Image (cartoon, rainbow, N blue to C red):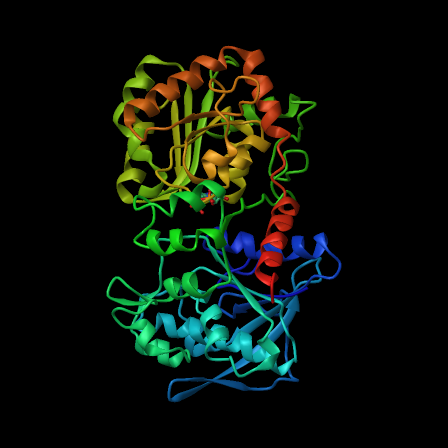
Length: 486
Ligand code: ADP
């Protein structure tokens, strides 16, 4: 099976969010799953990607290419390489005018045009190499026009006659709303992009809506989120089109990159450990306490947060009662995060008020995020919505019990210990209300004193299979469904 995977970001080259993790992990997992899978990944060459350090070579055989966008020919070059330790081919689309802009994503008037170039270039490079993909896999609004482009702009090319498309939604909130003129530049029927057309949404041409209408199959990053986005509450205005396409919509949980997130081998930790021997976790706990100049006897739990401090993450549920809980219960709270100024200020202030109980590091620190996952006892993730979420999975694998709001990927991964005592892996609450969050916090602190119950839950979490191999098998099923009946 030939797969063309087009993305605006990809680990280890460039990352702003979960899409990059999926792009870096899913293609190699697909290749591992089946020897007849071949994947080409297309990605913009942003200024921050050091091509030579990653072993890319200029595709001299292609020379300078150009893509026609409306009435203009845009020149670009192509660089070629492989994802580390894999067969996956990477093609970087090199167009400094479009992709050297300081940030990956901009609010410039031609934002959609930048990614139309990426999508056209991906198709035209495949044409040059006479590569007929069975599947074109698009991701988020930046590449969501591919299904429509294959159906309309490149319908003349027999090479794509048997190609089917899959669109994955990593974040429904970003929809690529733009000027209908760009539908013309992408080679699409402009009337679809105008008011009353099925690519039109919120007074604009919606790249994402075009993808939702035209893709043969649609996926998102957890089963619960797949059903939530069909409802007005979390549908971001696209619940109607998503529920109309529900028979083509599948939720597949992201995997965890266990090369980096495995307490047995993690290079960031003071000691390694696994489910059969938790001694190393105690060493990590003590190391974390001393890193933050805190102390706590073994029967006092350490609660942790590692997060973007954004409204989505639901800290407004925690804030109203947290001071009171800190005054009445004995626990430690360690926070790593950055984002909204009021939340940064709140956690800084809290550590000033409770210097013996709370420590906050405002910033981004990869190594510290690993040390916190390993050293903490429980992890707070009260997200208002969460398409998949990674930290609750890292927490379980590291023997740290997650405390979560029952939504999206959190609902699919964390089993409440009181609702299901024999299967529980953490604590979850249904109603997104501060008093319910607070009650759940108390429940977690109370349960920590029942060490046999707590340890059993830790061990169940540590044995969970969050591998990319499981996710890759599910994506292959979706690809097969897309190819059915061709
Ligand atoms: P989202 O993509 O919505 O931010 P996820 O849970 O899917 O949430 O992924 C967040 C990722 O970013 C995790 O790998 C988490 O460890 C990491 N992360 C978030 N904030 C920080 C931070 N301040 N320092 C280090 N890593 C962070």
